[in-house]
Image: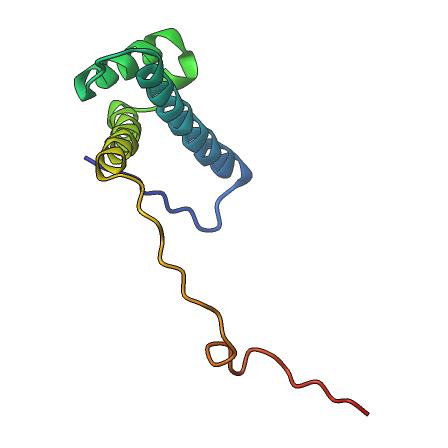
Length: 115
């Protein structure tokens, strides 16, 4: 479940402040989940969900965020962790670099006049 949606047009400063606070709280949960995974061995997705519940009990500002938003933050953290594992298994692939020549940059430079 990935829920990241916020729309606020012509809102008050209080509404923008609340939205910023919710975004910072979601980032806090995501960072705590990744740090917990880095510090402990054998952490799975369900353990990260339990961690978000424990964070809601420990920190009052995390408890203000609803449970589905907390779970979505954990889901984003788990996606980054699984992408890390996938990249490690594949090995480091080098990016293909296209050689830069004058033909590929046609029209990007202005001609220089020598007088």
